[in-house]
Length: 602
Image (cartoon, rainbow, N blue to C red):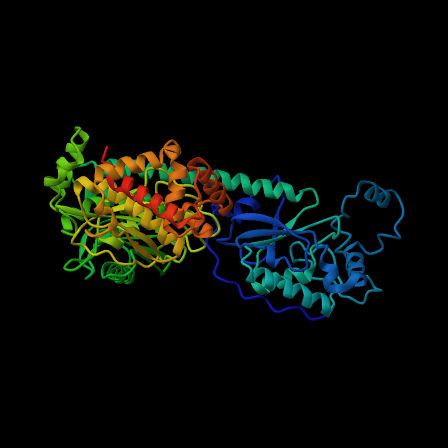
């Protein structure tokens, strides 16, 4: 019987659960597991899956221990072959035996004594006895070409799917692990574990999840301690070297600040081999010369990650944080990402890639002491600023370990980046181009981000990002520019374009024909029925700006299109007007834009 060729496995994302060493499960005496075949060192389990299907590959994610009782072997050898297999796994003459010993075994359902299966071959079967020294091969089994081919294909497909190990349960179908399965697992390098009859599969699953939970707790404790240490290091008189030392200590590796030419500006931790340092310099050159804001490489058992720390633009290049750690050390990447944020703030002003930091510090102090934003303008070094709102897209080439704020700061060349304070509603499936962490709703690290850039800094489309850009404005008008950038981002998301700029009407527009005070009073009176419902105002603004498109408005707002229809119907009723009338739409748009321009900073 032929079997399908192993399916090529697509590159799988790292399992989200901490690894559990297979050796730890084998060491648990309460489970009684025994490894019969396959490699025995460095095997990690991430979860458990039970399947009796002849082809479990479509249901495997990679990294799991696949548990089976062998029911599916009938698909490989046929029903008759399976009966022969089961009969051969019983002790020779067991059905004919009589007396207390046989009756006792039949009553209790316990497996036969070890001497029975290995006492010799059944003369009628014509099959020689297997090697009694092979662990776990407790009974001679009929080996047919069809069964051998089936088991070989089954194991090959399981390996191609990324399974970490195979667990074979003894009873109720089989009294021993088929020798052909042991040979196939050895041949394909798949760890094979015998699960005794007294151990239910649920006990194995429970043991794995207990170990995963304990490992996750250890990881979270380690991350918490590392974050506290990094924060404390950043507050010391020498923050840069202190953060590097804390990072190397908690990431259990080497950390260095490198220029694009490979010049080292500080390092901590055990220095890796020269080949790793050369690879680190290459990564620093990649992220520091206009490439992605992060890059990774693995060689000689070391995982390298580089983060661009400071802005890029004409006349300057980015420093890079490079971390070398063990590949099996996922928390190190998270810790390095947190350190990259701190080092971006620490090193950014020193590189000259951003406006003068003493002025920024003075402006912050003024704001904290109650000054109005307009009063801080003299401290900022630039009279006009551009506001950018950004969302990371699914096709981003940035490493998932890179915090979004760090990636955006490096992409735009500014360290003035912050998350949007009010979480927006989740983005629905109508926005497939957004990264998964963004589509589930923005948070402090992965949602909508806001950035400030001097007006003379050109903002262009960036790979992996969707941007909404305001017009350059004085400091006093930044709140309005912030709203304009948010509106531009919503339009960019709805149109699925990488960048949309807000354009203010020219001096000869219709709005210039009406005095600002009168226009504002008219707008307030017209929109009074909606004044107590910001979601309705926002929906109307987006719906009008997108020419009444239900789908694009839903995408921009992150709601279902039926919700948009319900809101527009409600707005029409509250305003007692016909929103299909183009004159009505024009008047409402005029009112919304008037209120938008006229809102003063708080």
